[in-house]
Length: 417
Ligand SMILES: Nc1ncnc2c1ncn2[C@@H]1O[C@H](COP(=O)(O)OP(=O)(O)O)[C@@H](O)[C@H]1O
Ligand SMILES: [Mg+2]
Image: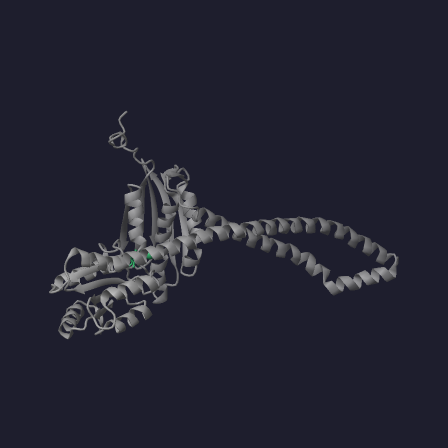
């Protein structure tokens, strides 16, 4: 429930606001003087909406706004001042002091509620922006870390290959030494040193080493190969978002994205690909298309996870395919999850719509994907689903976007010379 601080020394006004807000689903914290209001606002960042009377004992509403600006400038808090004072000068001063909005007494309840909604909308957008900035810096860090891991991985890999090949060569020489030792032993030559060698070979278990060292280097090489594959996929995936559309190999994007998302799907499903080997390059914003493919794979994995967790399935399958269809490319992400219930078909692209528990779903994946596909690429995103069988999302992208309209480019005033 959204909390609202209401501060007014007039008991009837305070009660009236409290009742109106509670009827509309808000939780109200109500106080009757400015000092209490300030103490709450300055100590509780969860209070992001406040309705403050201008004239109050202790501190008045405008003084509170001024103090908020001075001491908690970066705090997300939307303050609506209640005032009997009219006149541009008063109101300008209140807004300058840091009030976000004002309403004059006597006021209308519906108007107050509508203004409170505006406040909520602004706080919501600011929160989203902060979240987006956080994600962006995580993305940049990930790409930097991938780069940092790449260099040591490369020399570890090179050294392992050197050890592998070196040991093979040394084994050839060791083979000859073994023959020589056998010959000496048979002819009782250099008995003392041959005995030492036999004892040492026994101590270090030379036979075991000769057998297992190649296995160890082969397995380590395989591990390093996986690390570089993941690092490469991360680097390509989080390639700094280009502002201009470029020609992109969608099959490569799909393979990289599956690698990057491995931790999300590997416990609940297998991933299969069915990629068109003759797929043409698609002119698009690669980082954004990667984001869409990732969102769909993560949703597919989470849908299957739901069934694994409730015990109705042990493991599912996600299939990602690509095909050319005339001037279009279709990318499909199918899952063997529970399907999307009919009742929410027209809600899934809504901002913040989620059926997942807090912390798992943010309800932004499909909204963002929709905007990337339709608005930024003139493409189409659609889905087919069957209860208990699964869901297939299809992204349809034009291979080459429409050229920018000539008239729009030359029709600007001041361009004609
Ligand atoms: N593959 C899928 N199978 C079943 N339901 C899905 C699938 N993809 C999306 N949904 C539904 O659409 C909702 C919105 O998805 P999304 O915008 O990605 O947000 P989130 O994944 O954070 O919930 C999900 O909560 C879920 O109910
Ligand atoms: Mg999602």
